[in-house]
Amino acid sequence: MSHRMPQSELNRPNSVADIYLSFTVLALQGFGGVLAFIEREMVERKKWLTREEFIEEWAVARTMPGPPALNLSIMIGAHHFGLRGALAAVFGMLSLPSLLILLLAMAYGRFGNNPQVIEALHGMGAVAAGLIIATGIKLSTALKKNAMGLRVCISIAVAGFTCLALLHLNVMFVLPVLGVIGCVIAYRKVGP
Image 1: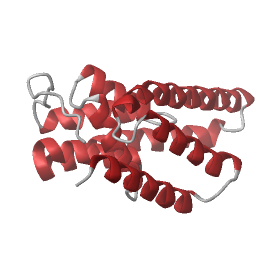
Image 2: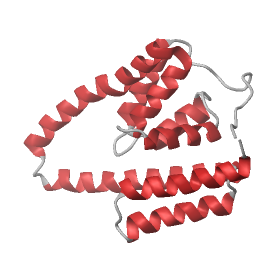
Image 3: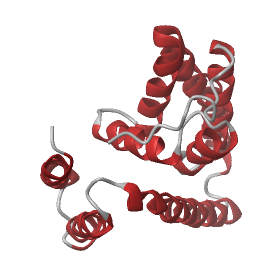
């Protein structure tokens, strides 16, 4: 079931350059994970996707090989401008951020043993975890409209958390099993 917003309410990137600049800015903000920033930018600010579309696209991006944020950027770029949009999104996600990472790696090589730097990195880890949790809570509001229903979605999420965080099972086994279960349930509820 697609939750597409009417075209009059959704915006569209102005150009391939807009795709490149948007994903460059997002990638530069994404220390510790870019999910929170992508969701806020693509859904709330730019309105290129609805919240439901974002969740659907993010789910697909997470199941594909490679970094999910990069996969999502490729999907969004390709949706609007085909191959040119996909390439612009990739270069946006990688060009300036890669240069910045190289500079930070050189700085870390020089100052990485400094106690203040170590404590600052611990603090940034806590902030990144908080951003991911806050985004998950915000995105959970879209589950009410999911074809499987809120209870089934919560059950699958709890099963995933239990398998990964508590039982320490390999994600390569958990994801396909829970993914197939979710697909079967959704197919039975929605039908062909």
